[in-house]
Amino acid sequence: MAAYQICVRCENRWPVTYQPRQWCPSCRGVLLSPVSTDVPVPPSRRNFRWVARPAVPIGPVEPTRTRGTAPTPRYREIPRWGLTDPRPVDTEYEPSRSETISDLAPTLLVGAAVVFGLAALAEAFRYGLLVFNRTRLVDPLALAVSDAAVWATQVGAPFVALAAAVACAVRLLELRRRVFAERGEVDPRPSPTVLLGVVVPGVNLAMPGVLLTEIAGRDPRLLRAIRIWWVLWVLDAVMFVVVVLWRQRDTIQARADGVLLAAFAAALATAVALTTLHVVRLFEGTDIWGRPLRHRRFTYANGPAYAPIAPIVPRAATAGSPADTASLSQDDTPAATQDERDDVPQPVAST
Image (tube, rainbow, N blue to C red; front, side):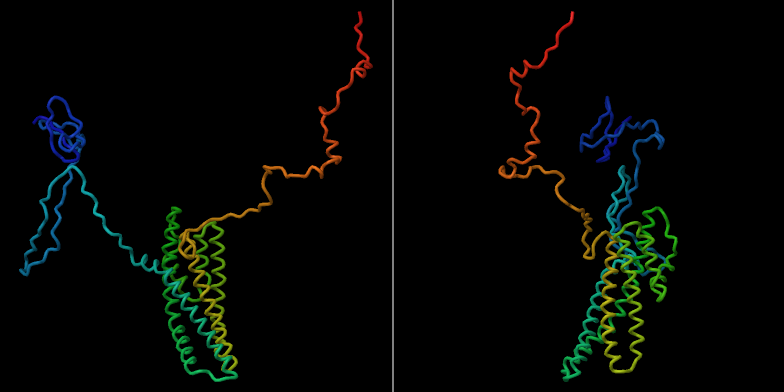
């Protein structure tokens, strides 16, 4: 066999008789150009490339108990060479730990909003019992339910809020990396600076708004949402400090007012959690429910641009009006009589 052609599909070799072929007689695949067996062809001039196909082992190999000897491998087939590259194995993408934590941010924010909402209802219910207790006795069952609700929400709310804050900090870090990568830049702020600016009390009143504004761009909706969230976040911190200081008073009326202030603080914390979720969703291009945003534009419509049909006016309303008399055209003027034309002097030709 002086020359042969290799099929790119079945890898069979077909001898060249009098002229090269184009299609494989076996599988109808494309045949490569003839290759001579007498003259060696350098790799740079070859029109094909041999690819080694490693064998696939049969499951994990159990090590033997004998020291100093390696386990005997077992394979499904013999290693061989071929013309086509092996197909890439579809491996499942495993997210990193930071991506897993950042994906939990919306769920934790919803949980924080629910817990703080229940806390506001529990404090409001307790304040109602205090008002009711001014003139009548309170049922012990209602008092027990109120105590259990207040205790459960006061214990669970801080843990859920802390978990949501950590998840939001990690999500902000991932978001900044993605936004700056899309711009072809690198985040100028180190990762520890971003995380500490969100978690450290006092500092987190200013830094999160700055970090969000840096990646918001010029989107007016996103900038407006960030500013609203920033104001609510600062007001929530101020309300928390007011509640803590107010509870230092020991009078009965001060304690009752402290319950009412706690209800307002919990309601404000619910609003902060929902606003934070709204900002997170806006960076994803969705609304607070996770649905794609619909960009709407409102314009003033004073009337149609043109009137396709003229308004219908009764004939009696327009009869005899001066406008109709003045609107007579020149063609409507009666023609002059023959006598009037004869009175007009005619030009005489001079010799």
